[in-house]
Image (cartoon, rainbow, N blue to C red; front, top):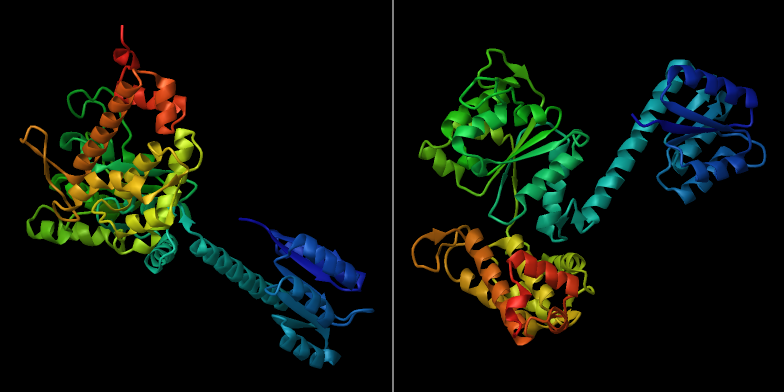
Length: 476
Protein backbone atom coordinates (compact mmCIF):
# COMPACT_ATOMS: atom_id res chain seq x y z
CA UNK A 1 0.00 0.00 0.00
CA UNK A 2 1.29 3.49 -0.88
CA UNK A 3 2.38 5.57 2.11
CA UNK A 4 0.39 8.70 2.97
CA UNK A 5 1.99 11.91 4.17
CA UNK A 6 0.94 14.16 7.06
CA UNK A 7 2.36 17.64 7.68
CA UNK A 8 2.15 19.04 11.25
CA UNK A 9 2.59 22.81 11.73
CA UNK A 10 2.92 24.00 15.35
CA UNK A 11 5.27 26.49 16.98
CA UNK A 12 5.69 24.19 20.02
CA UNK A 13 8.60 21.96 19.07
CA UNK A 14 8.02 19.56 21.95
CA UNK A 15 4.44 19.06 20.74
CA UNK A 16 5.72 18.38 17.21
CA UNK A 17 8.19 15.76 18.38
CA UNK A 18 5.65 14.11 20.69
CA UNK A 19 2.99 13.75 18.00
CA UNK A 20 5.51 12.55 15.42
CA UNK A 21 6.82 9.90 17.82
CA UNK A 22 3.29 8.78 18.70
CA UNK A 23 2.15 8.50 15.10
CA UNK A 24 5.34 6.76 14.07
CA UNK A 25 4.47 4.04 16.55
CA UNK A 26 0.71 3.86 15.87
CA UNK A 27 0.60 4.46 12.09
CA UNK A 28 3.65 2.84 10.51
CA UNK A 29 2.41 3.51 6.96
CA UNK A 30 2.11 7.28 7.55
CA UNK A 31 5.03 9.59 6.75
CA UNK A 32 5.04 12.50 9.19
CA UNK A 33 6.75 15.82 8.44
CA UNK A 34 6.88 18.71 10.94
CA UNK A 35 7.46 22.46 10.82
CA UNK A 36 7.58 24.98 13.68
CA UNK A 37 7.30 28.09 11.48
CA UNK A 38 3.89 28.81 9.88
CA UNK A 39 5.28 30.58 6.79
CA UNK A 40 7.83 27.86 6.20
CA UNK A 41 5.03 25.35 6.74
CA UNK A 42 3.07 26.88 3.84
CA UNK A 43 6.07 26.53 1.55
CA UNK A 44 6.74 22.99 2.75
CA UNK A 45 3.13 22.00 2.05
CA UNK A 46 3.45 23.25 -1.52
CA UNK A 47 6.57 21.15 -1.99
CA UNK A 48 5.33 17.98 -0.31
CA UNK A 49 1.64 18.00 -1.32
CA UNK A 50 0.67 16.18 1.92
CA UNK A 51 -2.49 14.10 2.19
CA UNK A 52 -3.51 16.08 5.28
CA UNK A 53 -2.23 18.99 7.38
CA UNK A 54 -2.54 19.15 11.18
CA UNK A 55 -1.96 22.71 12.36
CA UNK A 56 -2.24 24.71 15.54
CA UNK A 57 -4.72 27.57 15.56
CA UNK A 58 -2.53 29.93 17.65
CA UNK A 59 0.97 30.62 16.36
CA UNK A 60 3.11 33.77 16.46
CA UNK A 61 3.20 35.90 13.32
CA UNK A 62 0.43 33.99 11.54
CA UNK A 63 -2.48 32.05 13.04
CA UNK A 64 -3.74 28.70 11.85
CA UNK A 65 -6.72 30.13 9.97
CA UNK A 66 -4.43 32.36 7.92
CA UNK A 67 -2.13 29.40 7.23
CA UNK A 68 -5.08 27.29 6.14
CA UNK A 69 -6.26 30.08 3.82
CA UNK A 70 -2.86 30.15 2.12
CA UNK A 71 -2.85 26.35 1.80
CA UNK A 72 -6.32 26.28 0.27
CA UNK A 73 -5.48 29.00 -2.22
CA UNK A 74 -2.81 26.65 -3.52
CA UNK A 75 -4.96 23.50 -3.21
CA UNK A 76 -8.68 24.13 -2.49
CA UNK A 77 -9.20 20.45 -1.66
CA UNK A 78 -6.47 20.29 0.99
CA UNK A 79 -7.59 18.40 4.13
CA UNK A 80 -6.78 20.65 7.09
CA UNK A 81 -7.32 19.66 10.74
CA UNK A 82 -7.05 22.37 13.38
CA UNK A 83 -5.55 21.85 16.88
CA UNK A 84 -6.85 24.20 19.55
CA UNK A 85 -6.72 24.64 23.32
CA UNK A 86 -9.93 24.57 25.39
CA UNK A 87 -9.99 28.32 25.66
CA UNK A 88 -10.11 28.90 21.90
CA UNK A 89 -13.08 26.82 20.80
CA UNK A 90 -14.55 29.89 19.07
CA UNK A 91 -11.47 30.02 16.85
CA UNK A 92 -11.94 26.37 15.99
CA UNK A 93 -15.54 27.07 14.93
CA UNK A 94 -14.29 29.96 12.79
CA UNK A 95 -11.73 27.60 11.27
CA UNK A 96 -14.47 25.11 10.36
CA UNK A 97 -16.40 27.88 8.65
CA UNK A 98 -13.25 28.87 6.78
CA UNK A 99 -12.84 25.35 5.40
CA UNK A 100 -11.17 23.17 8.03
CA UNK A 101 -12.21 19.54 7.84
CA UNK A 102 -12.22 19.00 11.63
CA UNK A 103 -10.61 20.19 14.84
CA UNK A 104 -9.18 18.56 17.94
CA UNK A 105 -8.69 20.14 21.37
CA UNK A 106 -5.49 20.03 23.38
CA UNK A 107 -4.64 18.03 25.36
CA UNK A 108 -6.09 15.13 23.37
CA UNK A 109 -6.31 11.40 23.84
CA UNK A 110 -4.37 9.15 21.46
CA UNK A 111 -7.57 7.42 20.31
CA UNK A 112 -9.20 10.78 19.52
CA UNK A 113 -6.23 11.94 17.45
CA UNK A 114 -6.06 8.67 15.53
CA UNK A 115 -9.80 8.73 14.82
CA UNK A 116 -9.77 12.30 13.49
CA UNK A 117 -6.67 11.66 11.36
CA UNK A 118 -8.15 8.46 9.97
CA UNK A 119 -11.32 10.29 8.90
CA UNK A 120 -9.32 13.15 7.39
CA UNK A 121 -7.06 10.84 5.40
CA UNK A 122 -10.07 8.85 4.20
CA UNK A 123 -11.67 12.08 2.97
CA UNK A 124 -8.52 12.91 1.04
CA UNK A 125 -8.44 9.44 -0.55
CA UNK A 126 -12.02 9.77 -1.77
CA UNK A 127 -11.44 13.25 -3.17
CA UNK A 128 -8.28 12.24 -5.06
CA UNK A 129 -9.89 9.06 -6.36
CA UNK A 130 -12.88 11.02 -7.68
CA UNK A 131 -10.52 13.48 -9.34
CA UNK A 132 -8.66 10.66 -11.04
CA UNK A 133 -11.87 8.99 -12.22
CA UNK A 134 -13.26 12.26 -13.53
CA UNK A 135 -10.02 12.89 -15.39
CA UNK A 136 -10.23 9.49 -17.06
CA UNK A 137 -13.81 10.09 -18.17
CA UNK A 138 -12.94 13.50 -19.60
CA UNK A 139 -10.19 12.03 -21.77
CA UNK A 140 -11.13 10.99 -25.28
CA UNK A 141 -8.77 8.01 -25.11
CA UNK A 142 -9.79 5.55 -22.42
CA UNK A 143 -7.59 2.44 -22.55
CA UNK A 144 -7.57 2.62 -26.36
CA UNK A 145 -11.31 3.35 -26.59
CA UNK A 146 -11.91 6.65 -28.38
CA UNK A 147 -14.97 8.83 -27.83
CA UNK A 148 -16.49 11.80 -26.11
CA UNK A 149 -20.15 11.20 -26.94
CA UNK A 150 -22.57 10.77 -24.02
CA UNK A 151 -22.97 7.08 -24.89
CA UNK A 152 -19.21 6.44 -24.74
CA UNK A 153 -18.79 8.47 -21.56
CA UNK A 154 -21.52 6.37 -20.00
CA UNK A 155 -19.68 3.21 -21.06
CA UNK A 156 -16.41 4.49 -19.56
CA UNK A 157 -18.28 5.29 -16.34
CA UNK A 158 -19.76 1.80 -16.20
CA UNK A 159 -16.39 0.17 -16.86
CA UNK A 160 -14.83 1.98 -13.91
CA UNK A 161 -17.74 1.00 -11.66
CA UNK A 162 -17.66 -2.64 -12.79
CA UNK A 163 -13.89 -2.86 -12.39
CA UNK A 164 -14.12 -2.30 -8.63
CA UNK A 165 -15.81 -5.66 -8.12
CA UNK A 166 -14.83 -9.25 -8.93
CA UNK A 167 -18.20 -10.11 -10.47
CA UNK A 168 -18.35 -11.95 -13.80
CA UNK A 169 -19.04 -9.63 -16.72
CA UNK A 170 -20.90 -10.32 -19.95
CA UNK A 171 -20.14 -7.87 -22.77
CA UNK A 172 -22.67 -7.80 -25.58
CA UNK A 173 -22.52 -5.85 -28.81
CA UNK A 174 -22.30 -6.04 -32.57
CA UNK A 175 -19.16 -7.14 -34.37
CA UNK A 176 -16.52 -4.43 -34.51
CA UNK A 177 -17.76 -2.41 -31.53
CA UNK A 178 -14.75 -2.99 -29.28
CA UNK A 179 -15.81 -5.78 -26.96
CA UNK A 180 -12.23 -6.93 -26.40
CA UNK A 181 -11.08 -3.36 -25.72
CA UNK A 182 -13.88 -3.10 -23.17
CA UNK A 183 -12.71 -6.30 -21.48
CA UNK A 184 -9.13 -5.02 -21.39
CA UNK A 185 -10.31 -1.73 -19.85
CA UNK A 186 -12.22 -3.55 -17.10
CA UNK A 187 -9.11 -5.60 -16.30
CA UNK A 188 -6.80 -2.57 -16.40
CA UNK A 189 -9.01 -0.66 -13.95
CA UNK A 190 -9.40 -3.61 -11.58
CA UNK A 191 -7.32 -4.77 -8.61
CA UNK A 192 -6.19 -7.67 -10.84
CA UNK A 193 -4.39 -5.38 -13.28
CA UNK A 194 -0.96 -6.47 -12.03
CA UNK A 195 -1.71 -10.03 -13.11
CA UNK A 196 -2.41 -11.33 -16.60
CA UNK A 197 -5.45 -10.91 -18.79
CA UNK A 198 -5.68 -14.19 -20.70
CA UNK A 199 -7.68 -13.91 -23.93
CA UNK A 200 -9.42 -16.96 -25.42
CA UNK A 201 -11.02 -16.78 -28.86
CA UNK A 202 -13.42 -19.67 -28.30
CA UNK A 203 -14.35 -20.43 -31.96
CA UNK A 204 -10.68 -20.53 -32.94
CA UNK A 205 -10.01 -23.60 -30.75
CA UNK A 206 -11.32 -26.93 -32.10
CA UNK A 207 -14.13 -28.33 -29.98
CA UNK A 208 -12.20 -31.47 -28.98
CA UNK A 209 -9.28 -29.33 -27.72
CA UNK A 210 -11.20 -26.51 -26.01
CA UNK A 211 -11.75 -28.37 -22.73
CA UNK A 212 -8.07 -29.27 -22.48
CA UNK A 213 -7.03 -25.69 -23.32
CA UNK A 214 -9.25 -24.21 -20.65
CA UNK A 215 -8.79 -26.69 -17.82
CA UNK A 216 -5.51 -28.41 -18.69
CA UNK A 217 -4.78 -32.13 -18.76
CA UNK A 218 -2.60 -34.78 -17.21
CA UNK A 219 -0.20 -37.02 -19.01
CA UNK A 220 -2.00 -39.91 -20.68
CA UNK A 221 -5.45 -38.28 -20.44
CA UNK A 222 -5.92 -38.84 -24.19
CA UNK A 223 -3.92 -39.91 -27.21
CA UNK A 224 -1.05 -37.49 -27.69
CA UNK A 225 -1.07 -36.17 -24.11
CA UNK A 226 2.57 -36.95 -23.46
CA UNK A 227 2.98 -34.54 -20.54
CA UNK A 228 0.97 -32.52 -18.05
CA UNK A 229 -0.31 -29.20 -19.35
CA UNK A 230 -1.63 -26.23 -17.41
CA UNK A 231 -4.94 -24.87 -18.65
CA UNK A 232 -5.78 -21.24 -19.34
CA UNK A 233 -7.67 -21.03 -16.03
CA UNK A 234 -4.43 -21.75 -14.19
CA UNK A 235 -2.54 -19.29 -16.43
CA UNK A 236 -5.06 -16.61 -15.45
CA UNK A 237 -4.95 -17.41 -11.71
CA UNK A 238 -5.09 -14.13 -9.81
CA UNK A 239 -5.99 -12.30 -12.99
CA UNK A 240 -8.74 -12.24 -15.59
CA UNK A 241 -9.86 -14.75 -18.22
CA UNK A 242 -11.58 -13.20 -21.25
CA UNK A 243 -13.75 -15.67 -23.18
CA UNK A 244 -14.48 -14.06 -26.54
CA UNK A 245 -17.45 -15.36 -28.57
CA UNK A 246 -18.70 -17.36 -25.59
CA UNK A 247 -21.84 -18.41 -27.50
CA UNK A 248 -19.80 -20.78 -29.66
CA UNK A 249 -18.53 -23.13 -26.94
CA UNK A 250 -20.12 -26.62 -26.89
CA UNK A 251 -22.63 -27.53 -24.17
CA UNK A 252 -20.27 -30.15 -22.71
CA UNK A 253 -17.66 -27.46 -22.00
CA UNK A 254 -20.35 -25.07 -20.74
CA UNK A 255 -21.10 -27.54 -17.94
CA UNK A 256 -17.49 -27.55 -16.71
CA UNK A 257 -17.26 -23.78 -17.10
CA UNK A 258 -20.34 -23.39 -14.90
CA UNK A 259 -18.74 -25.54 -12.20
CA UNK A 260 -15.56 -23.47 -12.33
CA UNK A 261 -17.62 -20.31 -11.83
CA UNK A 262 -19.69 -21.80 -9.00
CA UNK A 263 -16.96 -23.60 -7.08
CA UNK A 264 -13.87 -21.58 -7.94
CA UNK A 265 -12.04 -24.76 -8.91
CA UNK A 266 -11.24 -26.81 -12.01
CA UNK A 267 -10.40 -30.42 -12.71
CA UNK A 268 -7.84 -31.05 -15.48
CA UNK A 269 -8.59 -33.87 -17.90
CA UNK A 270 -7.28 -37.15 -16.53
CA UNK A 271 -6.97 -35.81 -12.98
CA UNK A 272 -8.88 -37.00 -9.90
CA UNK A 273 -8.08 -33.85 -7.95
CA UNK A 274 -9.60 -30.41 -8.32
CA UNK A 275 -7.48 -27.27 -8.33
CA UNK A 276 -8.62 -24.02 -6.71
CA UNK A 277 -8.30 -20.97 -8.96
CA UNK A 278 -8.91 -17.28 -8.35
CA UNK A 279 -10.03 -16.03 -11.76
CA UNK A 280 -12.38 -13.29 -12.84
CA UNK A 281 -14.37 -14.21 -15.95
CA UNK A 282 -15.25 -11.68 -18.64
CA UNK A 283 -17.20 -13.09 -21.59
CA UNK A 284 -18.32 -11.47 -24.83
CA UNK A 285 -20.68 -12.28 -27.67
CA UNK A 286 -22.44 -10.66 -30.61
CA UNK A 287 -25.07 -13.42 -30.70
CA UNK A 288 -28.55 -13.63 -29.22
CA UNK A 289 -27.99 -15.80 -26.15
CA UNK A 290 -31.66 -15.80 -25.20
CA UNK A 291 -32.44 -17.42 -28.55
CA UNK A 292 -29.67 -19.97 -28.04
CA UNK A 293 -31.13 -20.79 -24.61
CA UNK A 294 -34.48 -21.48 -26.24
CA UNK A 295 -32.71 -23.69 -28.80
CA UNK A 296 -30.97 -25.50 -25.90
CA UNK A 297 -27.54 -24.72 -27.33
CA UNK A 298 -26.62 -22.48 -24.40
CA UNK A 299 -27.21 -23.22 -20.73
CA UNK A 300 -29.53 -20.81 -18.98
CA UNK A 301 -27.76 -21.20 -15.62
CA UNK A 302 -24.43 -20.37 -17.24
CA UNK A 303 -26.00 -17.31 -18.87
CA UNK A 304 -26.96 -15.92 -15.47
CA UNK A 305 -23.62 -16.84 -13.93
CA UNK A 306 -21.72 -15.01 -16.68
CA UNK A 307 -24.02 -12.01 -16.71
CA UNK A 308 -23.81 -10.95 -13.08
CA UNK A 309 -22.89 -7.60 -14.63
CA UNK A 310 -23.79 -6.74 -18.24
CA UNK A 311 -22.08 -4.20 -20.48
CA UNK A 312 -23.23 -3.22 -23.97
CA UNK A 313 -20.79 -1.80 -26.51
CA UNK A 314 -22.61 0.77 -28.71
CA UNK A 315 -22.53 0.54 -32.49
CA UNK A 316 -21.18 3.35 -34.64
CA UNK A 317 -24.66 4.61 -35.46
CA UNK A 318 -25.18 5.32 -31.76
CA UNK A 319 -21.86 7.15 -31.50
CA UNK A 320 -21.78 8.84 -34.91
CA UNK A 321 -20.70 12.10 -33.30
CA UNK A 322 -17.37 10.39 -32.48
CA UNK A 323 -16.60 9.42 -36.10
CA UNK A 324 -14.44 12.52 -36.86
CA UNK A 325 -12.47 11.90 -33.67
CA UNK A 326 -12.03 8.21 -34.53
CA UNK A 327 -11.13 8.87 -38.16
CA UNK A 328 -8.32 11.31 -37.39
CA UNK A 329 -7.08 9.05 -34.58
CA UNK A 330 -6.87 6.07 -36.94
CA UNK A 331 -5.27 8.26 -39.62
CA UNK A 332 -2.52 9.26 -37.20
CA UNK A 333 -1.85 5.63 -36.28
CA UNK A 334 -1.81 4.51 -39.93
CA UNK A 335 0.55 7.35 -40.87
CA UNK A 336 2.98 6.29 -38.16
CA UNK A 337 2.76 2.64 -39.23
CA UNK A 338 3.49 3.58 -42.86
CA UNK A 339 6.19 6.06 -41.85
CA UNK A 340 4.65 8.92 -43.83
CA UNK A 341 3.67 12.49 -42.88
CA UNK A 342 0.59 12.65 -40.68
CA UNK A 343 -2.56 12.46 -42.82
CA UNK A 344 -5.77 14.22 -41.81
CA UNK A 345 -9.27 14.45 -43.28
CA UNK A 346 -10.81 17.64 -44.62
CA UNK A 347 -14.07 18.80 -42.96
CA UNK A 348 -16.00 17.66 -46.04
CA UNK A 349 -14.35 14.23 -45.90
CA UNK A 350 -15.22 13.90 -42.22
CA UNK A 351 -18.81 14.80 -43.04
CA UNK A 352 -18.84 12.07 -45.68
CA UNK A 353 -17.52 9.51 -43.18
CA UNK A 354 -20.07 10.58 -40.57
CA UNK A 355 -22.95 10.12 -43.00
CA UNK A 356 -21.86 6.71 -44.33
CA UNK A 357 -23.33 3.43 -43.15
CA UNK A 358 -20.98 1.33 -41.02
CA UNK A 359 -22.37 -2.20 -40.58
CA UNK A 360 -18.90 -3.31 -39.45
CA UNK A 361 -18.74 -0.47 -36.93
CA UNK A 362 -15.41 0.86 -35.66
CA UNK A 363 -13.36 -1.96 -37.16
CA UNK A 364 -14.77 -1.22 -40.61
CA UNK A 365 -14.13 2.52 -40.22
CA UNK A 366 -10.54 1.84 -39.23
CA UNK A 367 -9.92 -0.28 -42.32
CA UNK A 368 -11.36 2.38 -44.65
CA UNK A 369 -9.17 5.02 -42.98
CA UNK A 370 -6.11 2.80 -43.43
CA UNK A 371 -6.82 2.50 -47.14
CA UNK A 372 -7.37 6.23 -47.54
CA UNK A 373 -4.13 7.03 -45.70
CA UNK A 374 -2.14 4.39 -47.58
CA UNK A 375 -2.99 5.74 -51.02
CA UNK A 376 -3.31 9.45 -50.31
CA UNK A 377 -0.76 11.67 -52.05
CA UNK A 378 -1.58 14.70 -49.88
CA UNK A 379 -1.49 15.29 -46.15
CA UNK A 380 -5.13 16.45 -46.24
CA UNK A 381 -7.46 13.73 -47.52
CA UNK A 382 -10.26 15.38 -49.49
CA UNK A 383 -13.86 14.29 -49.87
CA UNK A 384 -13.33 13.44 -53.55
CA UNK A 385 -10.27 11.35 -52.73
CA UNK A 386 -12.08 9.55 -49.92
CA UNK A 387 -15.22 8.74 -51.90
CA UNK A 388 -13.38 6.14 -53.98
CA UNK A 389 -12.49 4.19 -50.86
CA UNK A 390 -16.09 4.20 -49.66
CA UNK A 391 -17.50 2.64 -52.86
CA UNK A 392 -16.86 -0.98 -51.95
CA UNK A 393 -17.94 -0.34 -48.37
CA UNK A 394 -21.27 1.10 -49.52
CA UNK A 395 -21.84 -2.03 -51.60
CA UNK A 396 -21.35 -4.11 -48.48
CA UNK A 397 -23.60 -1.83 -46.45
CA UNK A 398 -26.48 -2.29 -48.86
CA UNK A 399 -26.44 -6.08 -48.64
CA UNK A 400 -27.50 -7.58 -45.34
CA UNK A 401 -28.14 -6.61 -41.78
CA UNK A 402 -25.84 -4.75 -39.44
CA UNK A 403 -24.99 -7.88 -37.50
CA UNK A 404 -24.21 -10.31 -40.32
CA UNK A 405 -23.77 -9.48 -44.00
CA UNK A 406 -23.55 -12.47 -46.34
CA UNK A 407 -21.85 -12.31 -49.72
CA UNK A 408 -21.22 -14.79 -52.48
CA UNK A 409 -17.61 -15.65 -53.15
CA UNK A 410 -15.99 -14.95 -56.50
CA UNK A 411 -16.90 -18.40 -57.82
CA UNK A 412 -20.54 -17.90 -56.78
CA UNK A 413 -20.42 -20.90 -54.49
CA UNK A 414 -19.97 -20.55 -50.75
CA UNK A 415 -20.93 -17.56 -48.58
CA UNK A 416 -18.90 -15.45 -46.20
CA UNK A 417 -19.58 -13.49 -43.07
CA UNK A 418 -19.32 -9.70 -43.20
CA UNK A 419 -15.90 -9.71 -41.56
CA UNK A 420 -14.45 -12.16 -44.10
CA UNK A 421 -16.11 -10.38 -47.01
CA UNK A 422 -14.89 -6.98 -45.84
CA UNK A 423 -11.31 -8.17 -45.53
CA UNK A 424 -11.53 -9.81 -48.94
CA UNK A 425 -12.80 -6.58 -50.54
CA UNK A 426 -10.04 -4.52 -48.96
CA UNK A 427 -7.38 -7.05 -49.92
CA UNK A 428 -8.66 -7.18 -53.51
CA UNK A 429 -8.74 -3.39 -53.74
CA UNK A 430 -5.18 -3.06 -52.42
CA UNK A 431 -3.85 -5.73 -54.75
CA UNK A 432 -5.58 -4.19 -57.78
CA UNK A 433 -4.26 -0.71 -56.98
CA UNK A 434 -0.68 -1.89 -56.42
CA UNK A 435 -0.64 -4.00 -59.60
CA UNK A 436 -1.91 -1.07 -61.69
CA UNK A 437 0.64 1.21 -60.06
CA UNK A 438 3.52 -1.16 -60.76
CA UNK A 439 2.40 -1.66 -64.37
CA UNK A 440 2.34 2.11 -64.91
CA UNK A 441 5.91 2.49 -63.63
CA UNK A 442 7.32 -0.69 -65.16
CA UNK A 443 8.08 -2.05 -61.71
CA UNK A 444 10.01 1.03 -60.58
CA UNK A 445 9.49 0.99 -56.82
CA UNK A 446 10.88 4.49 -56.27
CA UNK A 447 8.61 6.05 -58.88
CA UNK A 448 5.61 4.06 -57.63
CA UNK A 449 6.25 5.29 -54.11
CA UNK A 450 6.34 8.89 -55.33
CA UNK A 451 3.04 8.52 -57.21
CA UNK A 452 1.25 6.83 -54.31
CA UNK A 453 2.62 9.20 -51.67
CA UNK A 454 4.08 6.26 -49.75
CA UNK A 455 7.64 6.00 -48.56
CA UNK A 456 9.74 3.48 -50.47
CA UNK A 457 10.17 1.22 -47.37
CA UNK A 458 6.40 1.30 -46.79
CA UNK A 459 5.63 0.32 -50.37
CA UNK A 460 8.18 -2.50 -50.19
CA UNK A 461 6.45 -3.83 -47.07
CA UNK A 462 3.12 -3.85 -48.92
CA UNK A 463 4.67 -5.61 -51.92
CA UNK A 464 6.14 -8.31 -49.67
CA UNK A 465 2.84 -8.76 -47.84
CA UNK A 466 0.95 -9.17 -51.10
CA UNK A 467 3.63 -11.40 -52.63
CA UNK A 468 4.09 -9.07 -55.60
CA UNK A 469 7.49 -9.16 -57.31
CA UNK A 470 8.33 -5.78 -58.82
CA UNK A 471 10.75 -7.46 -61.26
CA UNK A 472 7.97 -9.17 -63.25
CA UNK A 473 6.79 -5.78 -64.48
CA UNK A 474 10.16 -4.79 -65.94
CA UNK A 475 10.66 -5.07 -69.69
CA UNK A 476 13.50 -7.28 -70.86
